[in-house]
Length: 224
Image (cartoon, rainbow, N blue to C red; front, side, top):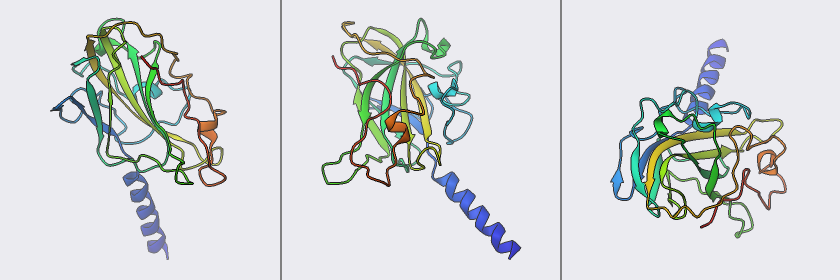
């Protein structure tokens, strides 16, 4: 019985680990880069961040920019984040940007962030359908200022409903240098941490009970 219990616990632990994932690879246009080539390397493997007041919500645990190169992108150009394994947990995917005051490699993400894209659930079929993919693509907004940015993607996993469970943030930040932007943007901005609260409907949502609408936490995505 003791051996069976030990095996069961090990199986559960292995299953929990395999259910995690990380955005580890960036592509810009037709250029596909290696894992963490322009993405800040985290130190917690593929585990999530759950503390809403932690600075780790910016770019993940141990993910500073000192050893990360910055790649050049053009406003309007497509980029893609690819994971080590497809998203496993229900919840929205959101993409944010924050302009560095200087070099992105020296920026800690303490400034203002704006959202450029949400991948929210589709309820058109009568129930929620989530985009649980192995990669996510979007374009650099054409109206932002030129300069160096942190390009941040997050998966907010809400498969363990709050407050009985704790939603999980799977996060990565790429470092990009944008050129060709018009600079005419005026987005709603937030600070991270601070953008997400445990009272947000999109944080406390129970996907297993009367789930027929959803509001993604954070600001509205900007438009040019």
